[in-house]
Length: 170
Image 1 (cartoon, helix red, strand yellow):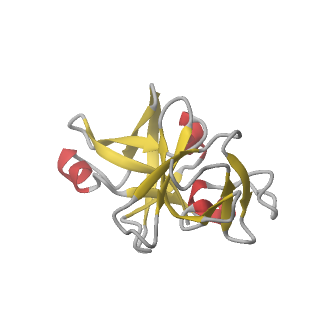
Image 2 (cartoon, helix red, strand yellow):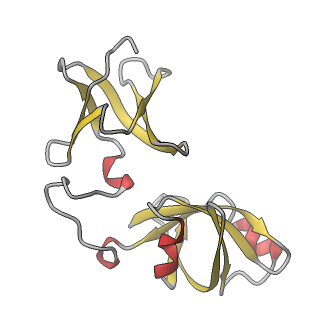
Image 3 (cartoon, helix red, strand yellow):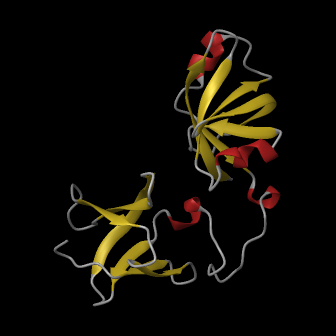
């Protein structure tokens, strides 16, 4: 499963939900008539999308198994996933693309060979995406590294690491 978004909250009183997509384009989830919804613990529930609309940077969706606002409230915070075999095929090298979920837990190393930590998440900030990197040595320490060409030198899925032009003291 590849996580493609998150249900934020109910939308209205008829069982609609507000969705924050993790896709490159806001309408990326509209291509999938069935979503798998869950907490990210591997227990996914298949849900049919009966209607879905774009609202600025969010989606609103009506799910067949969600008849009212109470049911929609129960889905708040849940992740939306799509089976990897239903997604467009990406290059094995990772150079032509990868999914955000593919880079979670990758080790981040700078040009000097110093380990900065592991990717724990990504933040969509508007102008560019930002890597959330947590140091294994300092569990409370988190670095935010811009996910832009000037900083990210290489994403190497085979080596399970991201090479960045970023100092330890940044």
